[in-house]
Image (spheres, helix red, strand yellow):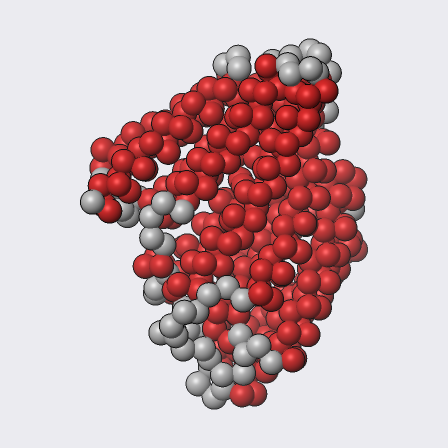
Length: 374
């Protein structure tokens, strides 16, 4: 279990990592489906809050496996077995996410999460035993993760209902502080190209969830004998999906991963990118549900389930990737268009206006991309 070379050529995403990502994408799909059930029936804050709680478990577990893999993926049998067990933890999170979001019972989400994280402890113990230079860092990770998981297990039965949310936020803070504490001993090696590919691959998989929304809209159009309103929703879903992909992958990302602060900012900031990509399909499904029920889409809260994730995705993409490359005029125009997406929340036919604005956002990025390639 020795560290990988940060200058290793042709270091890309492995087949095991792609399989791992698909399991987590399934978890996101189930949790976003449960969120749709709540938000479509008017429980906006409950649905969004529960979705974000489950999504934190998915995102943070994925993040830690990804960061460990870029540093210490030896691809031996034990590493593979531990990652496969971690997939089992992700499947448990996925299976428990529906009950957690709809009924507030997060027991199975916690069980899956703890199993997954304790496998990470086993990986770090392997590093501590094999690599003298990273032993202190590995032991810090192993001890800190174990202690935090013990707190997760004790939290549900011991913390009263009135303190569940504050205690959850405290636990999230502790989880986020583990790498900050551990990496102070000695920063683990990161392969910039591999990291950017891993985040890009997972973003792409999450965007793929939105294909379901576009397909469902076309199915509705066929069932309603080519009704233009459903074709418009399908076109919106595809247009916004394409714009998200276009802007996220338009410019190089490898140089964004370097020092500890920059790397953690890149990783932590992707919580917004991933959560927004996973939630966008919920907005499309909510629009379809409202139209099929025949009472139109007049609710501002319902409109926000589409416009807010779209705006959040583009704003986070700008902050993490584009702002370092876009000239000032392009950044200003980009952010103005993103703000207008939010304003679409209070307008009729907000989904079509959102699609039009996404075309404008994409055009700004494309103009800069073409000029850079010239």
